[in-house]
Image (cartoon, rainbow over all chains, first blue to last red; front, top):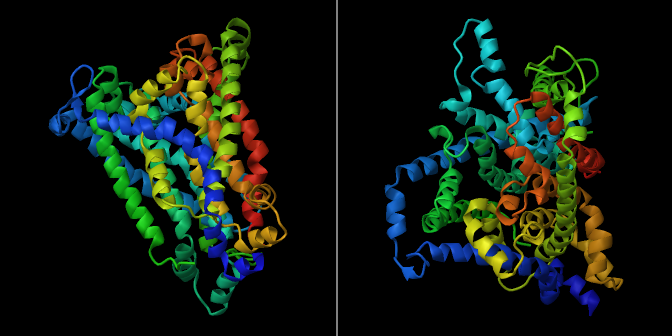
Length: 296
Length: 272
């Protein structure tokens, strides 16, 4: 019986054990449903209701007011802009650093640790340094004035967006580097060596062998970087408080402020739109990951 | 032997350029740390990079004059360790289940898990409060611990890892009559040390840095972890700020050093 299963290949091993698999997932799913799924569905349903108790169905009226709101528009555009600039940048830097540190040379494991270190620095401590460098009378402006250049108030002007991108890349580059390193090491050496024997150039090996085989890693880093790009709100909040410069006014500022104003329905409506957007992006990523995969 | 097979004598310009750039980048990455270190050991600093006088005034304030700092430090340790342990166990089980078995609606469930994982925390803040209130957990550590333990990120990470465990190994173990639990513990998990260590480190950092959850779910300030205390601190003395910065990095740094070998070297071991 057992040997039969083996002969049928890996997929049949998996299929036969369906309920065992479910048992493994069950503890997680229980907690997930209670602490994530139910609250989530609850808040979505909330966005279609009105009144003090939130019991009256009001259809899409919260959404209409949302789209009319200047603050929401700015927040949505900023969040999207941050996503579109920050995520590719952090993936690029992670990959670039990984490609260099993949080579064996003295000190490369020290360098790896250096890039991982920012993950461990608490936000409050980091903000102290950010203030020191970028404040109006901070180090950067001092340096610029030595060279006779005019500085600006980096944290309280549209430059704050750039500072936020910098913090994001600084913090997450090492993590992506680690993921790409693992991905690179998982590529069979024979492939690269054969290509080298055939006279393939470095760029060709990168483009035709390494990058295609790193696809699962790209998927993973994209999802994680996206998740982390939403977490940048904390840094933005510590830099600018509840109403920072408009360039870093994110959707979470909007939600946070509505939370403080007890406008939960509006908060929930915004949340639902974010949800739809994330569904779309994750859907695209899943589709891209599956595309061209050989079904086993 | 890997991609950068190079002779000792002449390093190709491309490789030299790449390494030089990475070293420069590393120096930039380290700058905030150096700054904190310099100023933590400064005597009444004005916030410059090089303090004019070195001293331990910051440490004196933090440890001797304001002991509430240490209480909050302990709160943080307690919360973070509990979350890491719980999340580690739950995520290994679920990650293995998602990676190596089929059950109805598996992919649909997984898709929902990822989407909800990506949602900003603010989205479910209100309804999360209602749920924990209904469970009578508010103002206890459980209201923070349980959502932390069941956070989907660990499952995402571990599934990705377990998927690389060869089916032949599992098949052979099953032939020997090993239970699935044993296969997970003795075959799959050792192969996924790297992912597990990453999970431990990242979930610790996450728990260590949490700000929003304690503010929402806990009433008494003495139960707040150190992260909340630091985030709310409006301290004008930079030596105290930097001392706190160093102190609060310390446990994470120790954990990092502990995991480091697994993180960077077991990635390297994969290539054999």
